[in-house]
Length: 190
Ligand code: GRF
View 1 (tube, protein in one colour):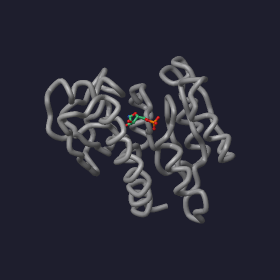
View 2 (cartoon, helix red, strand yellow):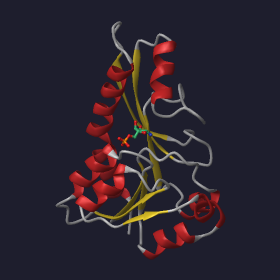
View 3 (cartoon, rainbow, N blue to C red):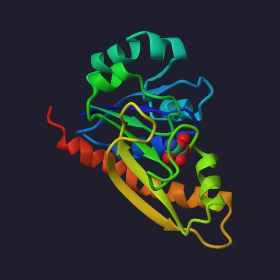
């Protein structure tokens, strides 16, 4: 099975997925894609000798290049890992039920446009929540609205600050995303 990873930034989740499948005979990470030429995920892909592709808005939203690229590489599953742009309709239609995302909150709380990165954790603190968490979900045409696949929670302690919540969320993401990806791939028929 072949996967493509989309990421816009550091790519620590992408890294965990690359490590997870490094010696796999069944799963290959065929391509890493990003909208951000400075994204550290590009360095990580290089380190694992995984090819990468940088695209801009025009290419992503106004051409079929990206869909064609994924088709030509025979991609089975698209994994979003900190990718910040909305997925265009044509790509969703080409990969029905084959695009997944991870979000650093227990959706449907703290999701939607503008709810990413620090914004999520700050909103959790601001709301005085007693727990935070992560959601892994299928991607549809709206931000953070596709069917949920998996959720995990952590406790918010009184003394927790932004850094602590980020850390707790990231721990859960790194622990679960690779194995959930693996589970979904097992169910995909070639
Ligand atoms: C993660 O918190 C993920 O949930 C969110 O963006 C962050 C990406 O972090 N969508 P990284 O680039 O994988 O380190």
